[in-house]
Length: 335
Image (tube, rainbow, N blue to C red):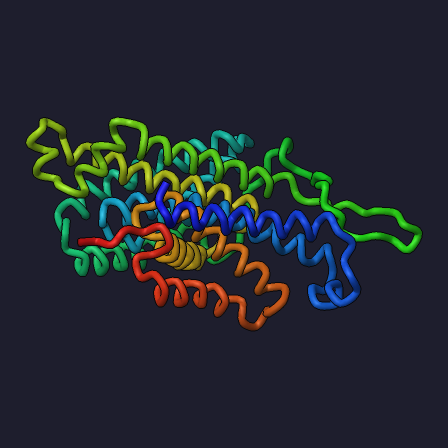
């Protein structure tokens, strides 16, 4: 465990301890006034954590493509929105959310493979051309999606099993007669958080404990040496690009169910992915998780306590991180 990892583990434990303490104690009047109410604070905090889960799933794919493979794919947000639209169509016509999830992941993974083979492979190690070409693809596909689905806002039907809300062991209020009221929270948002944890654990194990993870990291450091050992580097990179794109499409279905599907979401989630990867550190799944939590929680708390400056709060996190640690929280200095 590195020094940075130990430091952020300690920070995480301290933050969780403070939150648990705030949930367990009776708040004094000045704290209630400062934070509006227990319900407002804990609802915003939970919203931030679950939004962070969604950001992480999107940014995990971006971390694989941009942070690990060094491919500047500014069309990543477009893959998110296209996956949301495809998921919406499949769920609406079939009535199966799981089928929609599979369709969103597989179709966008296939689109990612085509992008890697037909576009990005031809302009490898040319970041400027990659940026310009992918921005052009973003504009092109935005117009195509607008022509097909129009400017309407859609909501992907939620699975019946994940509807409703659950009471959490968090006190949201205490009535004058002493009755304790516990916080209710949507089950689907808790599902989003659980899904992000599963995706994060799976990616971490793949990159650190599997043969393909070893090949990807070796290919990034010394592609020629890996190819000389008999590994088909192009095939490995295509698979990783497809996985990163598929995660963006899958996140589109999850986000479209929790929130909505509409034009402009591609830019929103592209920016979120960029900030998360920059804050967390390029190529680090753990860094992406830390960045997602910081961005998600800061954004949601900002909406409650500083509504006019919530976007500023998010980018302030990025600026402070770059000032203190330019390579990102868990990033490594590139030689």
